[in-house]
Length: 240
Image (tube, rainbow, N blue to C red; front, side, top):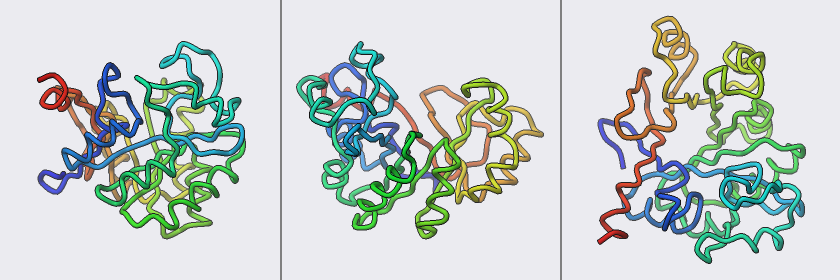
């Protein structure tokens, strides 16, 4: 799906976290139904299985304060959304099968080299259009070195939202750009309100992806792609 040459990607698919949950095969099915791209998140389990799951731990979605990296995939299969398991990246790629464009966000972890290598093994044989992105410039740099043909992006958000304000200021500096030379920047939707910030962000980026846009939100930056959430898209099929 595109409009005025802007590409649209469903943030973690199309979901409402009531009947259809984020980052599940069902959420991706609805994105396929509407022919929109898919943005998804990848983490690695204790036994090095790549799973499609956003959060570091299970607290928000399962009320269990345990981290994904401390569970084997067999353990993780015990946690389901309406009897639907957390999918592996391999199963997800097989289901999407190149039907729409993908943005694969790789979540930071202690075993960066193993994580990136395993993601690469799957994407090397995937036939569809995709790009990779991360908040971690080390991950983006890994792809610059090891898979320079992969389109890669660096995620950026307001400095106050990082683990510390100092890290936030560093991430908004020119250093990460020099370190990983991203093909695109994925800017949080509220960025760019002020002219000077907007000028420099647009100057640095070859391409800009906006995340996560929800109905009624303003966008301040020139952009080529939008990662969005809009659960209203489910109403036609679920809430008849």
